[in-house]
Length: 323
Image (cartoon, helix red, strand yellow):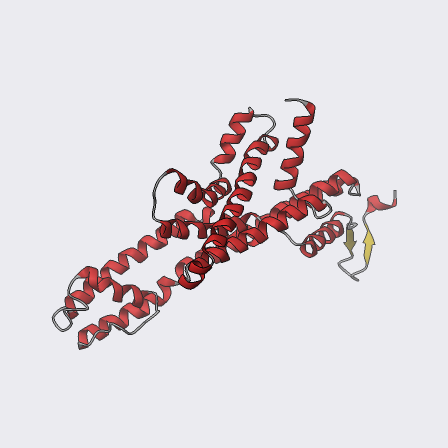
């Protein structure tokens, strides 16, 4: 690759993957993409209003074409610049690795419905719903959403176990409700699958009230399932909350360690400062928290050891400080 092409690719990578607030071009592109995501999702939602879609059908199609082209250019540019993230790998391998990443898949899904309509006749209503998935592109620009998605990936096995338990309870509750209520209410509890609606509403403690047990035994069973559901339905939320706290703690520890390494010589130079700032943005840590971590590390790094007299409590410097 020529020097000019390499420079352009590096510039594209920095603009799309590491936008800086001091760079007006990258900042404008990032804001523009965020606005396009919101506008696109809003337009897809408005298309479901029959009167609006009938009146502005052409405008909706043209806007969707514009958004698709913009997202297509973004996707191609990110794939082309992907080798900048892994300069030690062959370009094709780095691009393939990026295309398999979750964010690249989301970017592809955001533009795929439009091109599918050009290749084959598909249900337009289905493709309209698929275009709503563009909202997931915001995870790239929202540190909070990125953290949440990372926690869900980390706790996937635990969440799967929790949902497995909920599924077992769902089947158990439906089977029990069928046994005690199917004779009294054959329409609502005529089969185990039919009773699953009641068991799902009860286990999640929603309680719509459209289907309720009427037999004494059914009411006792329903009360027990409701009490059991209070704890079980909150289990996934507790897992995510615990994982979120651990994840945020680990992120702050990474930034703390970076500050500690940078302050080994007593000061943070320009290169170290840029590295720390990039890490702060990547970790989604606010400037206020980063400043607090910096002050805490600096205070501990340069705190002079002292000794305290066990008799009078007088503090005097370590013997090595006077030399």
